[in-house]
Picture 1 (cartoon, rainbow, N blue to C red):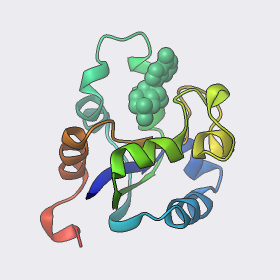
Picture 2: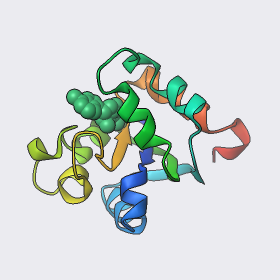
Picture 3: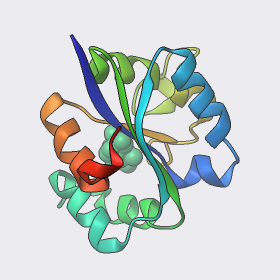
Length: 138
Ligand code: CMP
């Protein structure tokens, strides 16, 4: 069934000029954009968004990375969106990411991994409402 996921083009990929290429790949893979914005996370935003990772050894570097520059946040729609988008993303660690995946093509490291995708339908809904109000979703 058709449903939605939340993606972010992360600061590393924005800095490298990959916004257009990544959006082209996402659209070519059959996703429809339902909402999109160019924004920057505050430290408070990032702490809230990544609350599940609080206490992990990489939490501090994750916050520094995700707040260091602007990102593109978007809601994407497709059949089985969460699983399909994670397949397009590839492994968290780009060294393990399959050929043709976004992280294989655009990521540099496990932290600077270019693109986010929600890991469940429940988190997709939570993360979508974190970034967008109802009137920003089409
Ligand atoms: P993502 O899966 O989008 O959301 C959680 C992020 O935490 C993940 O991308 C990485 O950027 C980061 N992360 C996860 N595991 C590690 C790790 N072992 N070392 C460093 N960063 C990590």
